[in-house]
Length: 281
Image (cartoon, rainbow, N blue to C red; front, side, top):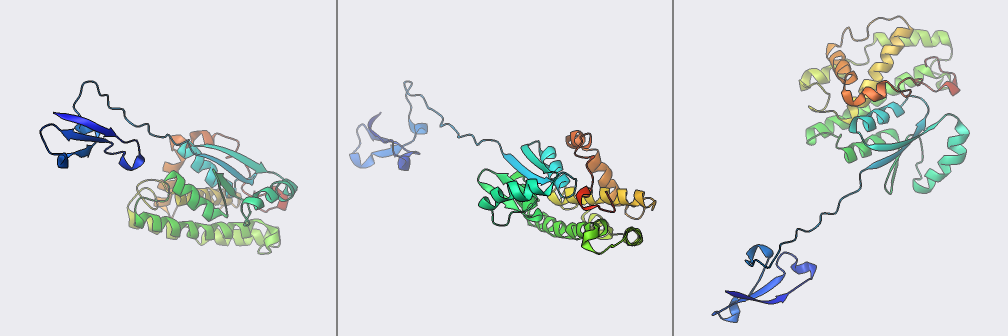
């Protein structure tokens, strides 16, 4: 048999907190043991309580348009996380009222911004990387993560081209006629041929992995924007030469997690900001 000599409550001995001596043996054989070594009906093993982390909750700010905001709205809805969004309809509400508050937390204050706990992140791709890391949407494994990062940059280029077509203040399209001409040329250039090649090479339904990553959400939004732009200019089916992108577009659009978003007023928001008199809303 054995006799308990000492019970230690220090964290340093949490695994083996009980010192025992064995009857008939020299004290050199005394040892520290854990509960799994103690055999006594009077003892009850208590499982340590696992501290529960509070569920993730995000604050998100962007203009009251689809723009970059739609990407985050879809991500949050898809993952079913709690989030509060602040949609800005006018410049003064952001620049005069809320931007100074964000500047206190992040000197790079801009729209969009994402807050979670003590973190405040600005700049679109940085926000997407952050949200992706918190929600496990940056890709499984190095290869997928690297592809996701590259595609976030690639689709951002497509977004910038769309912005330059839409807004007169960018001076790329100085008149409606110039917009019409350049928009048609842009659509005919097949801006998604690289994305089609990615799907052909990956052999998966999504661009980076077998499951969705943050880049997929931005790519889908840009496909939808271009579909609307083609309808405006009566340029037919943008998917005619990119069948794999079409399959991706349809599969994404049918996701049950996004059914609520696509039925919401957020999906019906203008693509571009009406404040700046864009050629394409």
